[in-house]
Amino acid sequence: MTMTLADRPVDDGAVSPRADRPKRRRFSAEYKAEILAAYDAAEPGEKGALLRREGLYSSHLVDWRRARDAGAAGGLAAQLRTGQLSSEQAENERLRRDNERLQKELTGPR
Image 1 (tube, rainbow, N blue to C red):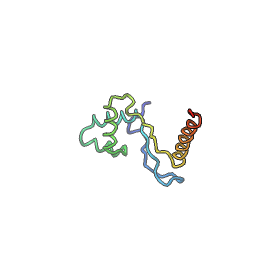
Image 2: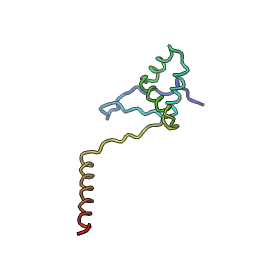
Image 3: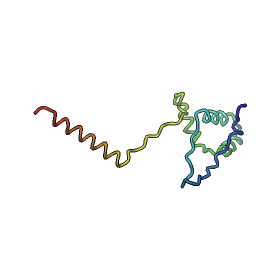
Image 4: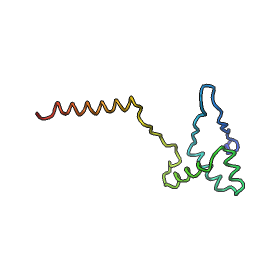
């Protein structure tokens, strides 16, 4: 049996007992494509209802369309987030580079 958009569980954004804030939602590429297709096929009065029912903002659709139209088949797929290094990681990286430079100075021509 195929699950329709109306049959999917709704994320109420509830906070788990161990968390201080709601969990970040992630959407599959399949879900994004289905929502874009349903939104584009909906009548003007139904578009807002679709967004409310799914708990989405119009900015979600803008971003998803932009990714889809960029031509990447996986454009709707989740992107890995690359965060900044922690202060400890940054210090380790700096020390590693300094160590390499000093090793080269020691083994270089005299």
